[in-house]
Image: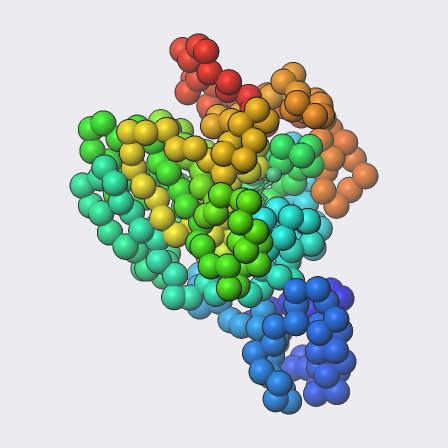
Length: 320
Ligand SMILES: Nc1nc2c(c(=O)[nH]1)N[C@H]1C(S)=C(S)[C@@H](COP(=O)(O)O)O[C@H]1N2
Ligand SMILES: [Mo]
């Protein structure tokens, strides 16, 4: 099964799949839930998820050594096959279904209270932004975690490009909305599209990152290609995937999970092991791809970088 996740551009010409093997693969694929979408039925046609990402040549990018880990990196295969992406299903094995996502053409709209409203093409953005690699922990509110090498650029750079006006206090992020490819979006009890928010101060913190790659390659679709937010001191649901719009506003955005269940999920969602979720403890976490559990760290171990953001806040539910 491992070879099925290989993208075509990773496979050297000399290893091109012989037709009879490929036919077997197609049969396997056809049986995979959600992975039946093939480019065509002709011999030699590649499955839809083997298409080339035009940004592949940009990676790997140079690692920023300022960001270090206290644990090994999560195995790529483990991280790539255990994902939350409700647009493609409410279970963890959405990676085959997510291959239906079309990542080109792709634009990100910058709007609201800014000096330079614009619609940026993803490849222009990639050319403009200073790409680097960062090793970050990631802690899901469901008490599993991973440690991965993201590639991308500081969110602060995008904020600079937008030019926030006086009075802009929040960023509101929005994911694509296309029920014809994302079957989860046909489930009308969810408030699609997925929305998330940050304060401007959070968005310009050095840790806030827009990821466009992972493991030295463009983001695989299940990770939220072609661009997703990464805020490692917060629970994973804040890290909105496949972003199409960022609006600057003076109104605090209501995020997807907050709208669904405000008693369990709030705006801030900072990681704190001593504040349990209403239905389970947050004291420890399971490390994806291992049998290990570890104690969860305050702000997911990023207290030094972010604690100041919250120091004078009273009456706010900072940890849910
Ligand atoms: N658009 C969108 N973004 C999303 C989600 C989602 O369902 N839809 N799930 C969130 C949750 S709960 C987590 S833990 C992370 C998972 O990221 P990963 O699959 O790259 O590990 O994505 C977040 N971003
Ligand atoms: Mo999550």
